[in-house]
Length: 194
Image 1 (cartoon, rainbow, N blue to C red):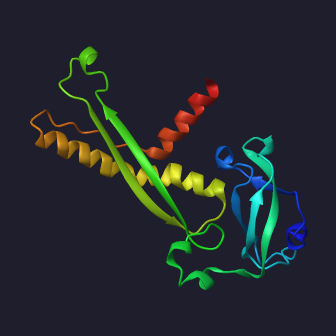
Image 2: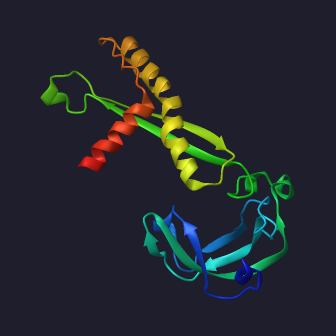
Image 3: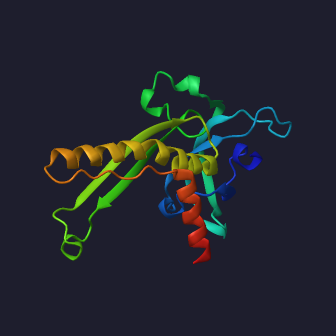
């Protein structure tokens, strides 16, 4: 934080674990200070602190976590909070300042190989949900999207397929009810054993 406050160059920043494939040298970034204001080691104001750019590709991967280096181009005199952005509605969803929005897509293909399975149709469906989250921990966000969003969207996908097949003159297709948490846990175990 001090290196950023002093507008030094080639500042090493760590703790990233998403978007590594989308970060490029020269890309403009928002510098957002986070942290739990209740902790004694957090001595800075949280919020949008400035604008900078990336000076190194992601490196030093440890699991999914990695580091980048940045230069600060503009440092604000004080960090901007959510309340400062209320009049700028499009900026209201900046990570670290406001609620996070996640768009989750659940896809299903029924009777994918029509000729081999002797089926009369293939059905591809996608249900998309938009969720607002007040979390800023990417691991928690990913878990909520993976488990809870899937569990919320699946009944809609199931009902859509049932209604569409019933109205299409083919035998009604009813997908089974699913315990999403249990299914994803079993899927993870299978992947680890593989």
